[in-house]
Length: 334
Image (cartoon, rainbow, N blue to C red; front, side):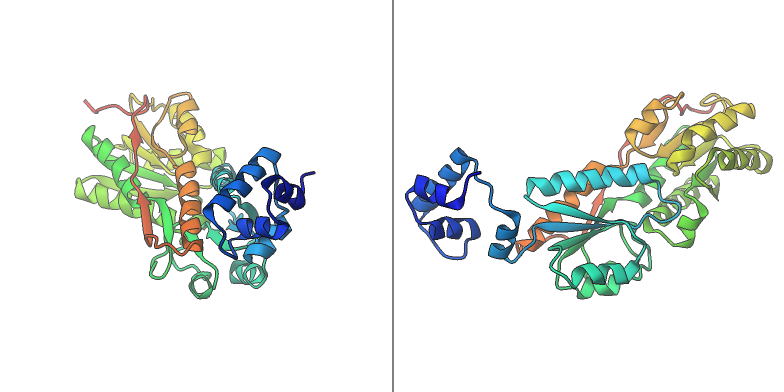
């Protein structure tokens, strides 16, 4: 294993000079720094993680706080996590994943140690109990999601309100006049989870703006619940011709349930969804959808944190515009 003394001998400098080149604690000439860096690359030297942390007073670890609460769709959450980990490695950081539903206590437990340099927080609620602590911490943080009051915080996410609006605008443009939103599980709305609430607001606002008849239906994430919602919609809204789905696990079961009840997609019923592209594309009837940009949001959250750690200014709010991909599940009304 290559040691710091090997690098020093190869570069023709002292071990302390190599240490200064790595930590930046003392100025050295550009020529010497370049010689040290060339030797590090040629010899394949990797500083010990603990030594790097001592030299820089940093752990080079980011915390990803994602409590796995009821109603969360874990496969989508893991897409965000993989994106965060991949982006963090590009900046020579590791990621500590925190999944317990500990709220403020869990954040304080991590923040009161030297375990992590900064935090990325997911599953943000409109009135999130963790916000006062995040505002007061001496460690930078980024929220994937937006609370009702985001002052003093750094937030990034898909613009879910605009996503709800865009789905309805698409259906309205095709001539649909009666639409429904099959939304997240009820507990997600009870917690006032920000992204779910914003989809409802966007859906309702666009329906009202276009003079459509609309309704919102929370749905548990299982096929039996999808069947119950389909039956209820047919019973209570017989003129229904357009559905927006914001609940990944029930997308295909819901289409199956409608067709079992005699409604063909898209012949009798047009369906749009807010979900990952790969899910929308593999359904038996490929679904017109707005993608969940997990890779872009996850990487963006890391970039914001790295800038904050370096003392650079960052925008308080980063909203990614929704992009709708038209597939076989929607068509115009006669």
